[in-house]
Length: 149
Image (cartoon, rainbow, N blue to C red; front, side):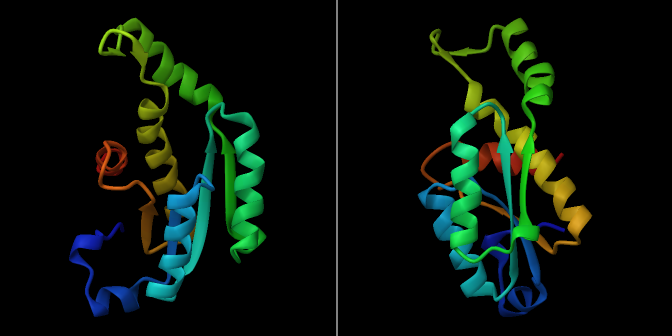
């Protein structure tokens, strides 16, 4: 289902009719949202996971609408309970603290977001999935490893 940007060809671009984007509403994911529509001419569906960030979820919906996403193509889901039970508690039990002082809250959420991204893509019959993580950090790796599960 998922296609990598590294192997994109003209025929691949034509075959992608619908893509589900992990969307935060921030600059990177908003730019990629418009780029996907322009570059691929495909229908873009956004997925925003509420993992406890609270006030950031509603603005993401508003921004997606402003950028032309149809209301039916905006998925926002409350994943807080699953995040705590399946990711945060095991992290604490494993004493997974980066450099002895930083909790791994947002980084450990990426595999959960990737899992739900794939589920939504299957549900809506998407040809591809995407994220807006840049190559300068580890989020790209976290998303893409989560997608291979």
